[in-house]
Length: 100
Image 1: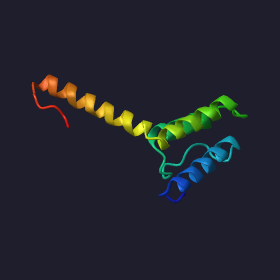
Image 2 (image 1 turned 90 degrees about the vertical axis):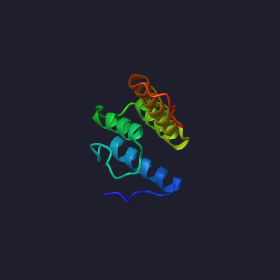
Image 3 (image 1 turned 30 degrees about the vertical axis):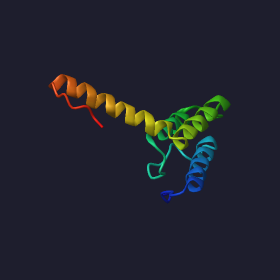
Image 4 (image 1 turned 90 degrees about the horizontal axis):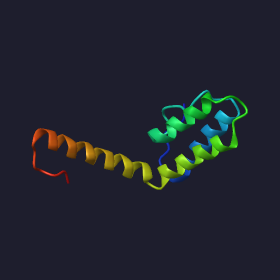
């Protein structure tokens, strides 16, 4: 079990440890208690299901997704999806209030 990271440095360390474990075949997937967001968790699990040796392009894809977590892209995309869901729900229900 990994300790849940609280700083960016700890999150980076956790990501690198999980990625290294998957690439080396020591981890069969990403543990759930890592503090990584869902898209990063998902792509690490996709990498784990790939045959050995892991392809460099797949490893780069994991690093790219992790960077999107760190720069806030995933959080912004999630917020936009929720806002769209609320808007479409308001349209269906006839509510005129726009979400904040």
